[in-house]
Length: 108
Image 1 (cartoon, one colour):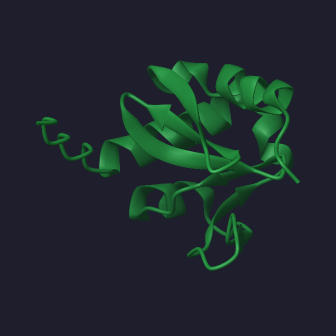
Image 2 (image 1 turned 30 degrees about the vertical axis):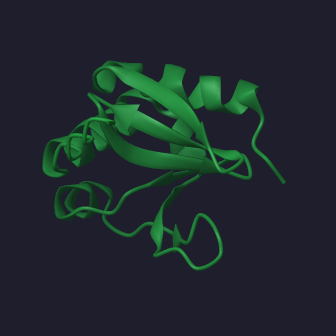
Image 3 (image 1 turned 45 degrees about the vertical axis):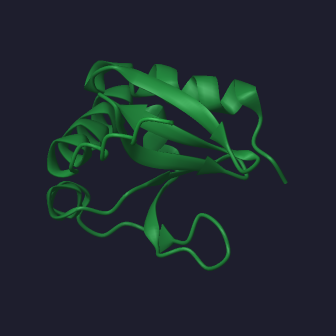
């Protein structure tokens, strides 16, 4: 089941304090970016944040699940998504720990 654009917009609104938040449709679902880095996925109207050491230190014990079949487990954010300050902080500390994406090679 594909995610609703309304839910993706809600996620982006809730995480807006983390930095420059955007999203992009990918493979029928959505990648969520913070300051140009993919920090999370929205799949089946669920919010999955990339696991990092800083994120794990912040959230403590959290549900983990793969966002799609064959994927590595991500942090599955449930009711915590309604806490704008908490989820923005999680996205911010996650983004700080992730590397910038590699520059794309120019097309010939």
